[in-house]
Length: 435
Ligand code: AMP
Image 1 (cartoon, rainbow, N blue to C red):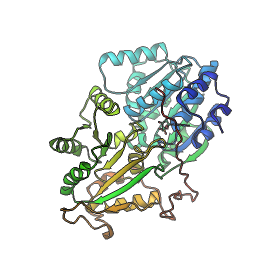
Image 2: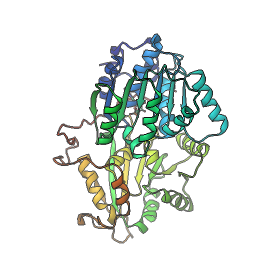
Image 3: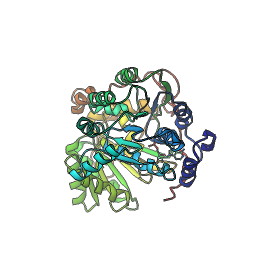
Image 4: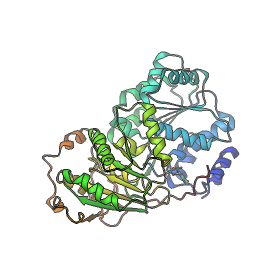
């Protein structure tokens, strides 16, 4: 199937051609026709599957075909980074359609708030927003939402995890009852199901869950105690001087500054995205990284869904994420769109159990590499890990409950979903961007 088979507006096809998009991904093949038919859609698809275009293209088509009007579509995303990323893709796809959009997210100055207010008052076609910031505007009463025809909730599971459940419900109360609601989520926990039940009418379900890395990722793990991790980073990165873009993830916010400081002490070009940075500072760090002016970016899982950069050579998990889906998201930052990349994970004794769960989810045994010469022994992988003393265990158990993982074949790559059907591993085909 080709994009041209959808019968999208000529300006949309023109943009797709300019961007080198030819073949739709599975989620696009399934979602675009349903959205065009004005059905409510609930799609289980992770980042990297092409989900953003799956909802943007049919919406842009409808507005470009004259079915638009001011404040036609509201897209809600959990983080600023994701909102910006959606807005950037939107600019590309809508380049020839003359559709107006604005991204509305927290942070920024009073001037930015005023600009957002103007866009909401005058009525941009599409609003891409984080829940809290949008609600701050809606509560002030100047946005007239009677014309909203489409509501899109992106990464709905993450929004629930971040505590936006009530905000989303309040936003929905501001919107007309008659509208199309589209929800994308990497997982389908019960909270998402009940939100869908409350806010959607006979939704069409699409399931493109992939819990397998893109084909090009080489995954390796190192068993290392906490005090071995910085020396290990130093030893490993010494041989990787040619790499241009490296992301280091840590589950703990407090680690970001520590890792950054230690890397800088070693003379490495590193910066971090931590929660105490203001919006402009975060954007500046991301911009330097994107433009390859900064080699090593350190951050928490918040950035794993927000960095839309195809050329990350190496992802390092400084610790193991408590949630297996977060591992997929972190590692999915490398080897994007047909390129190749490497992912290293440092596993301490407490994280052994979590990593075993991850291997079960992704259906792959990750190669455990020996520590470099001169290092004392690391933890033992076959011990099953230390369940009781994992500090992040309590945190994470409040978060998303993991799906049952029974019946997954190991080493076969295509793992089974809880319902027993096969998860599809989809290597993305993409031509280099033409910007
Ligand atoms: P997403 O899952 O929306 O985060 O998309 C992941 C990446 O794949 C983005 O960089 C998109 O620009 C790219 N992409 C999405 N759909 C296609 C497609 N049909 N062909 C090529 N690249 C795509």
